[in-house]
Length: 201
Image (cartoon, rainbow, N blue to C red; front, side, top):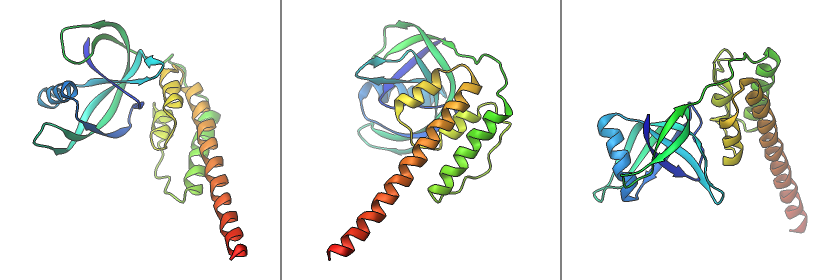
């Protein structure tokens, strides 16, 4: 399958919804075609190390705003993962022939599911947010959990490239515990600063 690619400094996980501002002419062309013909495009993570070969199919879920000069604000939703087989040429934007990426087929252990969901609920409690209903039977539970939290793109790319749901759940639990620890430490630091300030005054 040939696919239009959109290299960005973010990683889109399957099931994740992300807002994008489209302003470059070549990507306005790509996104315009995807909207008009109901096509998907490939979002691939790009940074100073280059463009990754494994990315996520993205579907335009919502057009929030269209400007007279062609720029637009949209929301995309992540679908299946793909691997770039070879780059193709002829369009203003990057294109490639891609292959679907499948998991190894192994079911995750119940303990891994329980730990990841517990880490997610603990983080939600620390952030004073609603954890919501978690479908622990979901095939892509690791992605669903990670998609609801601000994680570093490199960590999300690592998740994306793992072919084992067991290993993804283990990594998600570690990442969520790390975010929670930072959140708690930041809050404690803020409380200490307030107390110190009141002493100084």
